[in-house]
Image 1 (tube, rainbow, N blue to C red):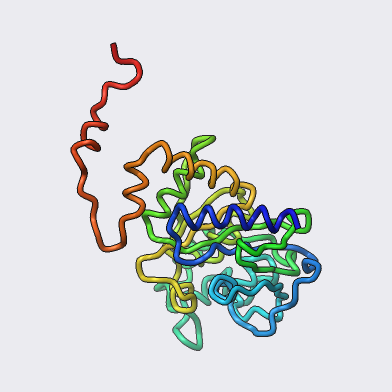
Image 2: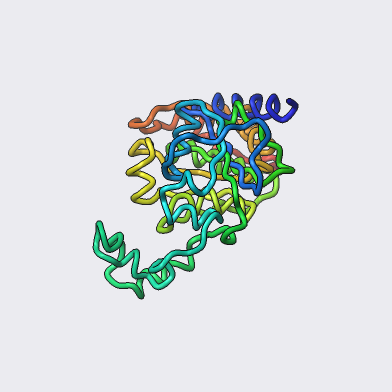
Length: 268
């Protein structure tokens, strides 16, 4: 189980360096179920399934019949769009029985619809979940996305690690559904994305008030862990900053202040 040991090693390093409270989750999109991985026995939302993996430690696959969120199952490529979604009637309709009361009119909902990232409908038959430290998935079967919840400071380090080797930026998108951004997004666009979440994600996922969501394609995992290790090794000040708890602010030391005005390697 080469992949399993590899993911376990990288997951442990990721959790240790970032001081994560829960393990990241590997989510695989495929047309067939991974060999030896059982189907989830319950029916729930795609976002809630993250908790089943990260909090209960379960490895499982799901089919469309397991998914109770018609929004999520569509954005994640399992099902067709449903009546009222594309027209905006669903998101503008009165909560709870006629819609979501998300926007004042269907036309406003339509304007926002283009920002949702969606896997092509009915191209995914199976979505599988596993704690990253116990992930048996093979990328030859289907694309794998790593999803985690963390505070903004930890997300900052993740974003810097994602751009450490090649440059670039990490986009944060809030407005569309959580699953659309951190699950469908990295799968379809091949990049790390962050979001503050959505109302449903914060209603049905055991995520802390101070946390946000991050997702990235598993192909980035090695480089992210390597970059995080280099950052905290080369910059002891960053290691100290990362270790400071939520609810505290950093007091810059004289050494840190002096480093900001250092002459640099080209100084004479």
